[in-house]
Structure formats: C-alpha cells, structure tokens
Length: 387
Image (cartoon, rainbow, N blue to C red):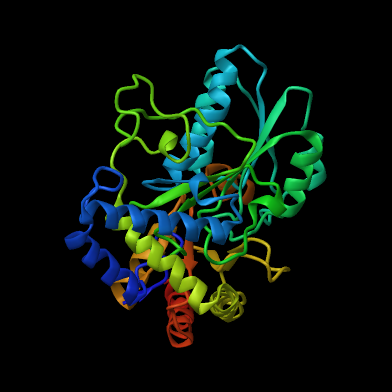
C-alpha cells in the first residue's frame, strides 16, 4: 500500500512511539490518582509530555498545556470556554474567521452564533487565499477574537500567523489557532506570534496515537471548563479546580496515548522539524510537478509559494472524486481522501462544492518512489477516464 492520506492521520509512526504505547499499557497507572509507582510513572510521563509540547509551541509553561482527545475537543473547549460566558453576560461578541476553516472550527462558531454571537469570514479567492487587509477591515468595536487555522486541510495554503497575531495584538483581540495540519512540521511560537490558545492534535504530524491532542493556553486567557468532575485534587470542593491544567482535564487523562505522543514529539526534536518539512515538501512538489500538466487534471491551492503544507488536492475531468479515489485504491493500492474534507466554505470558494476533490497528503515516511508511482497512476487513469 502507498499511503497518501497523512492529513487525515499518519499511518506510519516512529517505532519509538509504538513501543512507548505498548509499554505504557503494562506499566502506567492513573496519573495524579495515587502515590504508588504505577501512578507516579503515569504522572511523570504526562508532565514530560506537557514540557515537550510547551517547548515545541512556545507556551509559557507546562502547566498551561492541557490534554484532550483531539483538536476538535480542544477547539470546543477554547471557544466555549472563552466566548460563551461573554454571551451569557449579554455582551456583544463578534468573532472573525476565514473560509479556510475545518468544521472543527466552523461548527463551534455556528453554535455560538445560534446564541447571539456575530460572525464574519475573510473570504478566500479561487486559489484559496485570503486578504489580510480584508480580515483587518472586518474588525469592529464588538470584535472579541480571531479564530483561524494555520493551514487549510484542503489546499495546503498557510495563513500568516505572525501577521494575524500582529493584527490581534494591535486590536486587543484573542487569537485562537487550529494547528491540526502544521503542529510538528512548521515552527510555532505562541508568545512571538501572539497566539492566545493553540489547539493541536496528536495523530497527524506529531506522530502520536489517535485519541490524543490538546490546547496550549496563553497567560492572559481564562477558559471556563467544558467538563467538570474528577481531578485528583480538591476532592471535597463542590466546584472543579480553577488552576491549570486540572481545570481543563476532568477525568482520567489518556496516559497510554500521551506516552506515545511524548515519543512522537521527542522524535521530531531528535530528527529536526526543518528536515522533516523539507522532505515532505520535496515529495509534495515532486507530485505537483508530475501531475499539473496531465490533461483534465485541476490542482487546487496556491502553488506560487513554497511555504505551504504538503497537501496536493485535485480533480480529474469526467470522473467523480469518489470514483477516482476508489480506482486509486482498488487498481493501484494508493490510499487518498476524497469528498468534502469537512471544509465546506473552502469548497465553495474553489467551486468544488458539488464535486468534492481528491487529496494526496505526504509524510516524511513516504518516498520518492511512492510519489512517482502515484504520478504514473494518475497519468494512466487520465488516459482512460474518457472511455
């Protein structure tokens, strides 16, 4: 199998990640729920993972890293925990986002809109790019925050977080970022970029297991807990602890998965993020150059810049996106993703709302030979697609 669906989840993991999860299953108890060896081992592992994530993302301290099951949960925590209390106090709440967003951002925003928030979106052009001047022009006296992805999961286009963070700082706005497609591949420094909450998932480029993720919380942010319950501390208090990270981690954390996430982050530090990014982009551009002139192929996104996520999304004239993905799998054993990719606004901007599209996404564990095979497959399919 040639696996080119890494934007959904990385299938190939470092061996250290696999070993860490297997060992954790037999050695780690419940973190912060005891003083015996198994519980303390879990607590140490979880704390080391907080330290690693704080280091990777420029977070103020490990205690400000809270773990979740995925980036969707992290985004819900951030958006509900910051802006819902404002709405309950009947404050005017205007939030700005972009057409690049995944439903993990959009649906929590729409739920806030149903309760009175006003939303605006910076529109994307036919290549999936936004105007930062337009984004800044959307700001009004009731604007409270900017919520955006770092990279589109559909086109691979990156947003300029330094620029957006500068806008947010100048206007006194919260900046909440979805780093699902970039965490582990592109450098992110929360303090330098002006990011108030960074939401990440573990199972993509961080090379961790599914069921892991989290949010890094900046120093000026208070997030009301989405869940309350067991915390391992203040057990006689009827209210959930307000201090981080316990405030955002009701119930048992996934120490087994976090052990794997820790090893994934450690592997990235040891290998070098720049080296990983260069390899993935080399493969993505090899693929792009090999297919862009195939008759009937349309490639989406902004390919005038090299600063983009390793994602190549296409359609082939005369063939449904789902059919193309099926042929790639059944005839060539190439795994890709077809459909709407949970990015409805981006599809509308690209004009692919009805057709969907086929996404090829690359990992550092892919090879030039696999990429060449995928190019040959598309050329062969394009040669017969009209018959």
